[in-house]
Length: 110
Length: 113
Image 1 (cartoon, each protein chain N blue to C red):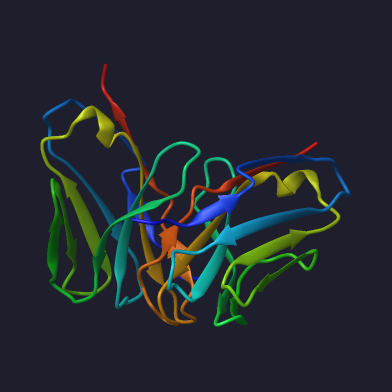
Image 2: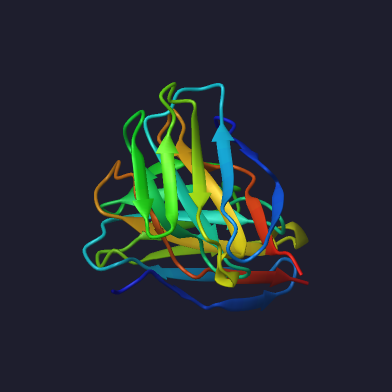
């Protein structure tokens, strides 16, 4: 499938901080999905993006579909302890199969 | 709101045994997807069904088979289990073929010893 390059691989957050992560690819996509996964649980859909340039919010989460259609970012504002987990970007390859980025692990800084 | 239900949540099998995983999609969702997630990996697409017909196939081993039943629930059958099959198996569902928003279940953790 198409490769989604997600960064950073991991990050430490302090409560109240704004954090950002992104996904890039050499391929053009029509959809970007962002999921959050807690250990041992299934991924939870956070935001779905369908149009280049689209900016969508879900509470403290904001995601944008890049205008080149090759990238997307996810911002978390005023982070709280329950924001820890693994965040995945995902999109569909030419054969309509959902592929995921490698994930960004968010941990609370002690 | 009702979510995707998977059973069992945990399963321990020995090598060469068989396992059956079950998935009950969100009500009125007609498309089911199966994924495998190894430790520290992202989920990998295995197979999907729309209206009880196989719609797409990913990296699913020949030892695995799946089907979707008339009530839209799906079962993933895994035979001749190998140690490398130990993973989390997720089912996701969506409404309509080609629908982009897939909703995942809590997963089945399969351990092969």
